[in-house]
Amino acid sequence: MPYRAVVIGVSAGGLEALREVLSCLPADFPLPLLVVQHLGVDSDDFLARWLDQRCAIKVKEAEDKEPAAPGTAYLAPANYHLLMEDDGSLALSLEDWVNFSRPSIDLLFESAAEAYGKGLIAVVLTGANDDGSRGLAAMKRSGGLAVVQDPAGAEFPVMPRAAIQATQVDFVLPLPAIGRFLANLYRPA
Amino acid sequence: MSPAREEPAGEAKEIEDLEISLLLEAIFRRYGYDFRDYARAHLRRRLRHRLELAGLADLGAMQHRVLSDRDFFELLLRDLSINVTEMFRDPAAYRRIREDVVPLLKTYPFVKIWHAGCATGEEVYSMAILLHEEGLLERSRIYATDFNRVALQKAREGVYSLERVRQYSSNYQKSGGRASLVDYYRTDNESMLLKNWLRQQVVFADHNLVTDGVFSEMQLVVCRNVVIYFNRDLQERIFNTFYQSLCPGGFLWLGAKESLKLLQIGEKFRELYGEEKIFKKNLQ
Ligand SMILES: C[S@@+](CC[C@H](N)C(=O)[O-])C[C@H]1O[C@@H](n2cnc3c(N)ncnc32)[C@H](O)[C@@H]1O
Image (cartoon, rainbow over all chains, first blue to last red):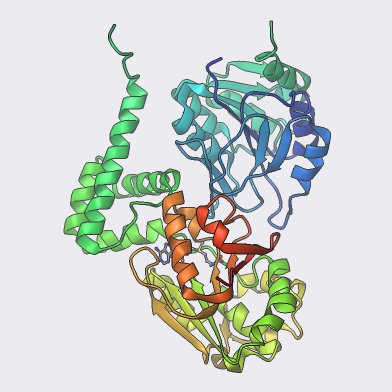
């Protein structure tokens, strides 16, 4: 498989959606996952710990300069942008809100597209704003694979709908199918 | 067999990377500011942003412009230094400093504290308030440094927007504040003005962590949300500077998402409070 990382963007409705996707993945899932979920500025690492207890893969908050390891989902900490460096390590930044968001999904997608080009899978899930659609368009231009949750079944359809309008999306799938899709990419034949 | 051809996207990126390196080299030679070991993903974004705003054709044109136009350089300098900060940011960590570190600092006859990368100073006044409430301010000196002179001037003035005062008060209360934040500022229409006596023990100074020297015999170095903009090599170097600036057993306080864990210099410190990112320099 040519893929090297998965990035996921999600906003309102994200807790359940993330659980549903990430809990499908086996502990030995061979790619790192980088996740931006919009959170209140004061949030602690509750979401990471909550997901970690419910998933076979490891889920944690991203730390600065940490190398992204397979089988691990890294959540952007509240109030920090999460970026991917070319060498596959994680970087945090406090620069201004991008499109009213920090962390910004666009920023994560754009930097990961630069680092991994066509080796990137990007996933946009439920949300009530349009963060992520510019980033998704950028990652499509560099040849990655775009997967978007079907707005019809999404708790908040605005974000997936904006993503679908912004670029040529490869797969529009209902939530339960997204986790299976990712897991199946690597199931031994 | 011929080697696989580079895809065009990869090639464009390689060229851009080279252009960035040349630009940073030019800035260093002309102005002495060294951004060569800053984290790349961040630099790339900020430079592109400025490129767009300035309407320049490419990074080559930007290099020419920055070499010949000092005002443009000052602009770039501000682009590359993110000054976002607040009072009593991460209240739980301030509480830890107050309850568990200050008692240890009190064992010294005189306490020297270095706020490296203090930005517009909110963190410095927070520390001064905390030290005052714990009865240590009179016996302390705070060195507050940054390489961004515009930010540093704001730090000296200690005038902040009233819009943020609610959040600051709430942070202050959560950090274990013993009084009320209003005791420490006056207001006019749109600003909070920190009281003068708070900066009596503070020295503000222009200091570049990458190119300027060490301070000596500090009991506490506070450097929060600065090294996230550095690559790993530069982090090692800067933490070495802090190591040399600290007295044996001195404390290093980092930002909420920073750590010594992945670095070699980590061996020379002990993690005292992991959650709050407070480290202690080994005795030898
Ligand atoms: C995000 S602010 C952190 C402010 C404060 N310490 C806090 O955590 O709230 C980062 C600061 O580091 C400063 N900085 C970046 N590189 C520096 C350098 N080489 N020398 C000194 N200061 C630097 C910037 O100018 C900026 O004010």
